[in-house]
Image (cartoon, rainbow, N blue to C red; front, side, top):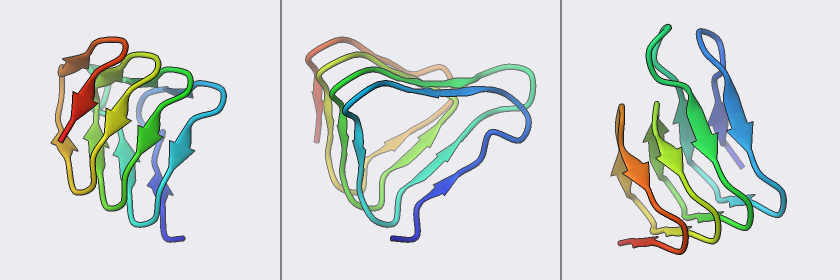
Length: 79
């Protein structure tokens, strides 16, 4: 519920079997930073992802904030 995905000024890629939980916001930066989320990623409740890259098989914990240019490698956990 209440997930916002805004690809209005750049592209967004969400991999297969990825789960986005309630209250999360996925956004991009105009012409600079797209948003790329790998396969089999779990994005917890009320996460903000803005112009970043998340690899495969990651867990992004509840309330996490990842901003422009951040790169999270495969298999990572962000608490």
